[in-house]
Image (tube, rainbow over all chains, first blue to last red; front, top):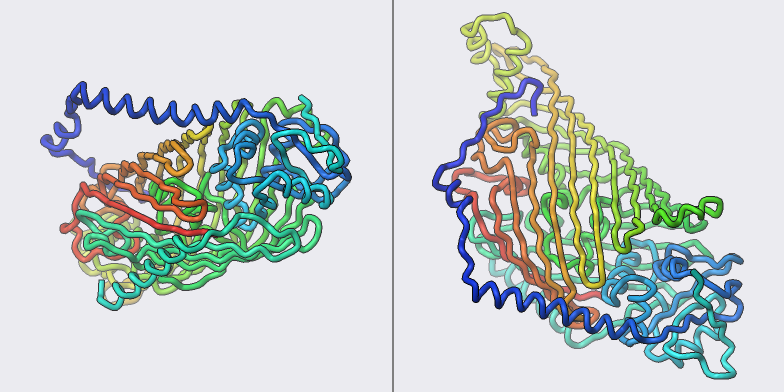
Length: 174
Length: 449
């Protein structure tokens, strides 16, 4: 602390030291119950996420988007608001469908976040003044209608859009 | 807590509960409108021994936050944001409404965004979001790195910042190495005399503060999202200047400084003469000023895999103070210049796991040494205090319940060894009445929209 510091080496009371160093035996039954609970918790979390991985994801955009293909990293950069403009300079407009299986699948597969982590990420950007929430919808129909009408909009579906919808299907490249 | 305070607190809780159960707000944006979002929290703290910032030994509701946010896209790439914020934590905040951030940012491309105005200062992995309770598992961030007393001063600054990530087109071939991100901030922080930082400086330097200001600061952050999915590493270096003036305490600490100073000035005198000089010099309760240069680095790592998050960080502060103290020697006024150096160290290890949409659990272990060269107490700034004021080691387990997308309830328990931060905000009348080992219970209800 000081230029010519005077320090006293602290001593620990032997009683306290022996208390700190002691090992409490954990009863095998309690240990078994605790470990079983941990394993159950871990597995129950994974089973939901494994199911989410099996679903199909179609990335769609407004037809005026210049890009026809995107890499997984580009999709991640777009949804994490790192990349905010398309190659031709148009603003990227994000759309999501919270509380849906397709949202969960999309998040885990492309964004490497759980839906809760993604929502927290968006809240972080908004509350520190560095971004905005994506436009949110409760059905794929609503999302498709919005993307069709909005320049630069991008989103995702669980199946190919019906014939007649003016939407661009964006292909994933390596 | 008085009956009036109790009634006000109960009213706040009642309003919060009504909001929690009768509204549901969405997290969406209307493209051309002004986005308005906000949050409100109410916490409760209880310790078995020792008051932690508030009067927690009796249980305290003086632990709440409110924020209101306005965001507007002005044109392509140009954004405006403003946040009003108020909080109360014992003697900190006291529900005064302040502008947490307000500024305009211009996005040029992924590698370059410029922002001017008042911004959140990056501090470690989670510092810029510490006011947003909804973003983390824990009620209290690990105090070894995220010292609560510093919160009101060093987390916002007026000035400008630039930030970005990724590679420009000619360097895209480097993508397999992972992605780098950076942030450079330059500006001035507000450190009023009743702020936590000012309190901490005053307690560390054994001084009653009268005035406190700060110099321009800069902050450099460099991060690396490694090729291992979910693993990021971050390093940060900052420098800022602080000025504090006040009066010295009349205590053992300043007596020791006096003896050291006489030793430095008159090394060849006999001990009898040194003692004679010492008794003629009065150094306690005297005007003193500090011009301090603070440098800080933080290194951290975070790994996320699905619902699992692991993190560890270490912070190192080095404070160098040029001290000018007025003193009386045999009735005559004199001035003495002295240099302090106070290296501070803190770190933590943290883990959390999202079990389901509504439940997340976590734990951490955090350590704080206010004087890293004096980890066992008995000397330095801890002179005259119990040894256990030289450290604070905190083990915490926590559970977070997401009652809805907008409302969260958290509980956590802490087992703490040491009291390094016990006198940071609330001066202690009698150190001998404190306890080395203590428990802290925290609960918090929050709503955001």
